Length: 313
Image 1 (cartoon, rainbow, N blue to C red):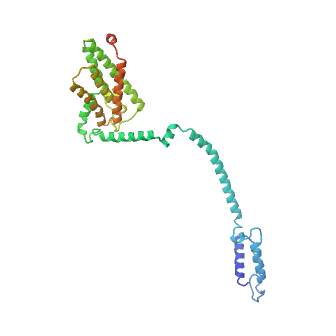
Image 2 (spheres, rainbow, N blue to C red):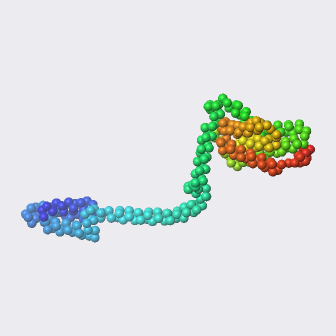
């Protein structure tokens, strides 16, 4: 029991330090223990009994030895705080779940398609990316620093040949000087086709509001015809409509027919070279130009109608 006494004394001192038990009064130094030695905290039997009372007294058992008894209040407060926070978090999650569900239900279909794109959406975005990349590479006259910057003036001049203002002015001059009924009928319908082209292209551009591949400011003539956006290309639609109109209503030799088609193609792709339109803008312009020609053919004004309009004018 002599080797057990220092352990029991150390445990008692630890408990006294932690405030778990009341300190014991030491026995007088002169009191003899059972084995004849003096000093300490009493006899070995008393020490053993005190050790057992310390270890097993109270309702905590070995928790007293571990030093958890003094911290019981803190642990209970922490556990209660965790429970409260857990309950509050669960309640908040339950309250937020209906809101999140409502928001997810209120999402538009466009956002859902962006999160889960279909095959058509992926194909469309891929083609759009290819169109932008190729249009930027073909914009060799977009500015003076481009690879073909020196030819920018000539390309702009080619684009002016497909502008609506010069064609309307030329048609009016020819209409004034024309003396035949057939010529006046063709010129009046040509003027109608040019006016329809300007209005249709301007309306489509206002709806699409697509910008070109390069930041190129529109010219004065473009502002007059409201040709300020990229889709569809107004020059391309006008060139396609005019070439089809002349091929259908004028008697031209084969070389002139070929030159007329080449002119329409050059006017359209010149807009890509100066960075004003994308490739798809020009191609769609050709399609709209053909559709405009078909529309004019459907509403073709007769000679009498043309003479009545000329007399009013």
